Length: 471
Image (tube, rainbow, N blue to C red; front, side, top):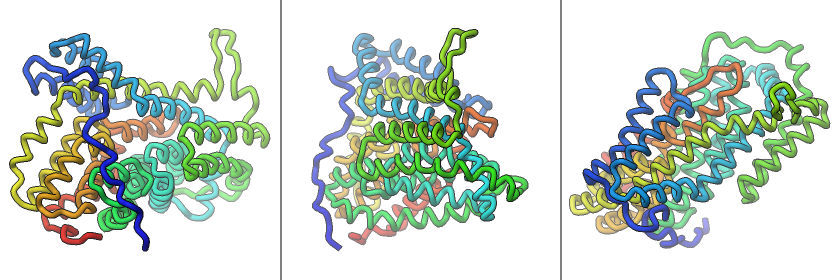
């Protein structure tokens, strides 16, 4: 098989550029810099375990953490400017636009009756309970691997698969965990995923070799996840819809063309925003043309409340919660990054590495710390990639092994922890209906693929599995 050329060192050094203007200094040093984030994590844990874990509950916690940081910083003006720079990064604005458009797309799909059509069709084929959970995981794996976007996969798959699966007896949290797990799989192995590209680039490895070598970790994790989903995926009775229900809903199946259009455009390397807008236009025209969505539902004037309502407005409103969360979180993360905490961590562990296993342990530990502090896989990989390459080359670790240590580790925590964007997004996509709202904590807990991936990479480090192989 012909290899692509190594990507080299395009990724450069650590950071996202949010700290332009110099390093932030805090009263209390490193502890002062970490205190706002510690407050945020404490608040998230309290809300998660007390039964109020949606993204709106995180708003006041984030505001409190930002306020604490303002009180602890030595330069309040620089701190405020750093918050704004963090919030205004292109990746943040892209995510917010995606959340808003995803809400509209999901609202149109639900109103068209496509969920009922999928439920009826799957039920008639006997795909119920755990069987539907397994199918949902595999579908998410394929979509994420093909498109390279885990967040896009969640936006496309959750509004379709979650309502249909719950109606067919699937366990709601396990089903959402399966969709999240499939998104994780694709983010980890897709050659067009930003994490795959970043991990290969920072280690000077070719993409083809990285993807092939990564399968030895991803495929066993997926197999373990499939077993878990098969055992735990059924919830209560799995009554199959009758033939009459199936026949009555088949007229909505052509609406599948709308998500197919989005996937097609993403495969053509079109922009995510372009794909979602095209999906919205397609869903609107088809819904109206097939008589599935009354024109008055799209947009209407509520004279009594002096407001405009309809699927377009209500859909965008569904994306407000996760959008505000994203803005506040990325501002807080920018302040933490600009404090130089990650650089201090890398300096502290560099001299402690004495052998190949130690190099892998410290590589795992540093990328874990980077993900936990930045909540972003790609940012974490870029931040510690040069360090991992330096210590890995010193002890003879292959570029593929180093790239896999980075990416496999980085593709676990954001899909497990309740304060990270993937779990928050997955949770938000279960709102707005009469179905159970799954918390970010539960979504991560039932993401068996990411848990298996974490166990496998730790086992590989401790046992040396895959260390001596180049591919």
